Image 1 (cartoon, rainbow, N blue to C red):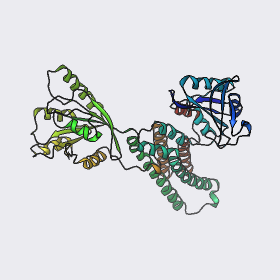
Image 2 (image 1 turned 90 degrees about the vertical axis):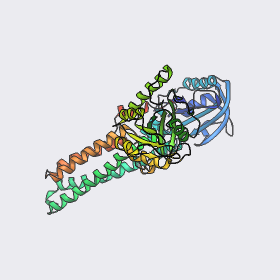
Image 3 (image 1 turned 180 degrees about the horizontal axis):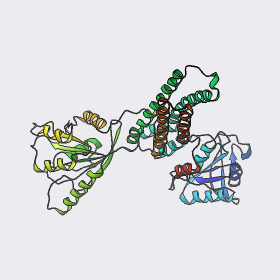
Image 4 (image 1 turned 30 degrees about the vertical axis):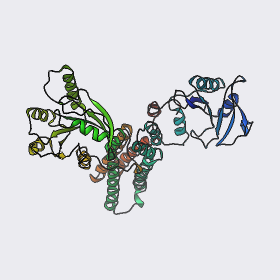
Length: 456
């Protein structure tokens, strides 16, 4: 492949910047820009995984001093010869060094082209490559864990296991079709074996598809709105969950006038929280705008944490609030458990479902809230190391494979000829190969790598 180059560090001033070059002429391009001084002076003699200090030049004129790293094919990220030039981290000097590399014969890399070459050269599967961009974008330990499992090939290995099961069944069916005279006379027993094996494949695909929702929640979190009437304790709950004074808490009704947002971890569940203005009729123009924003957020939130003050009886505002959220995905929270309870919890649960009792002031009840969220959002505990579906492309491929496997099963139990089931199993295998990248189209691959930055 031709030689490509790009800046692989963020486009901002810093201590150092790095320009990556990859391709069959990567070492040649590096030599035109970098004059090694120590511990070697001849770059051609540098082995892979070694570094040299020297001058970075433009037509023989020194621009900067820096470090050159050499990686020899196939033992590099892309599987090609790779050179990485590290210079001082000024924006202007970094761009100058890149321009020198381009003048030396490299072309500017496209978005994700280094990782795309790693895929094409067999260094990564497609699911592992998708894990790379998730790793770059990870904003928490949990997301790093998920992304690392993908880049380590957890999903790829799980897919390969299912593919091996399908290939084994298909081979037996093909042998039966090609050599019917040598096949076992007990065709019904043979067909029953195939049926059981196909059903087992379908179950494995079901289990794989079940990981999608939990995987999405782990990676992206749940959009949750904290809502209720003024002074129910919404802002106190927000502050408890975030561990900071994100929302102003006073005894004055209507203190929260705008939506306060933050991402928080409740156990291993990420919540994209929004503390909304209290629902009530108000003549205050600013507060009224906040109430309208709250009503809009209730329509888009995946989960509503409906907060009620246990020390007060239900008011007209409470009844109005309940009518607004009835039928949505709601967890009623009976707050202020540290006070004497007066509220009609039975009515709330009748209208909105099982409630959670807690004290946002004291911090009691968070474990129960976490369990309620798991139940209401149908979150299963996910082991990233076991492999899971991380995006819609992967889910669709798995769903197509499941559909084909189910068709093969129906063909076998309905008495159709075995070759019909064989064709459906081939379709299932094709969908799984597209998932892993073994047979993904160029259009699909290009679309995936458009999400990457240029230097990766």
